[in-house]
Amino acid sequence: MNSLTWAKLIRTCLRPEFAVRQIIRRFSIGSVDFRLSLQALDRPQYAFGVKQAIYLASKLKYPKVSVIEFGVASGGGLLALEKYAAEFGTRAGMVVEVYGFDLGQGLPAPLDYRDLGYVWKRGAYQMDVEGLKKRLKSAKLLLGDVRETVSEFLHSEHAPIGFISFDLDYYGSTTAALELFTGQDRTLLPRVICYFDDIVSDGHQLHCNRVGELLAIDEFNQQQNSGHTLAPFGIMNAGLMFPALWMEQLWVYHRFQHNDYNTYIGI
Image 1 (cartoon, helix red, strand yellow):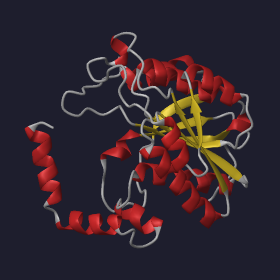
Image 2 (cartoon, one colour):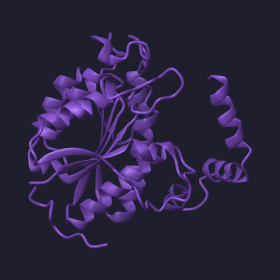
Image 3 (cartoon, helix red, strand yellow):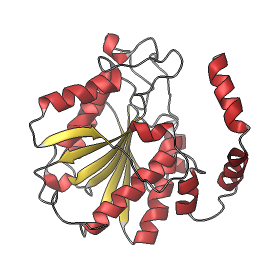
């Protein structure tokens, strides 16, 4: 980390609420909702996405919903997603299916400048496939080229998708993952919460909408008709006590012609 990043980290750690939140997180004090409101848990964006997916599915009277992580790597995110799916799903009385997509061999070589080769390199984020499979309880690991696994997934039986984390790093891989939104209505909720891990800049990792995930999003929107779009979440009141960078990384896929898009869900 550079000196500016270190300075920000030190200032954050010196705040009184930081110590309290760390204690709550370490010992899992209180309900998962309480910890989420304080962001005193691992990957709060995953907990938030799962909770929102279950809420919408419940309002629409769906018996189950799917949540997905693109870019599993060592598996920390998928394990967290699995945990929140179980916690929130059990409380809501809903089945939450969890899927993780990954090449299983680390990052492939970047194809051109759009894949941001100055940030990521071939072979990064290796996975211990067998070791991770032993740690997973219910999540399904889908290994292989995302162009192929997404196509296969679209033709498989799965609950409607309500939350997706995109963490494939590359423009090309993210573009392929966005093909998931070409499925039929039954494969998706009318609004799908999306978290894009690589759309914010940190130090040398400078992004713009002509490269990486932001370019993939822009091109997706340009290629769609008025019935589909990816739009920033625009959180006004998420029930969270502290602002966080990940809130700016949330988007929503809107399928306006979905049979349930205009179904009233109340407050």
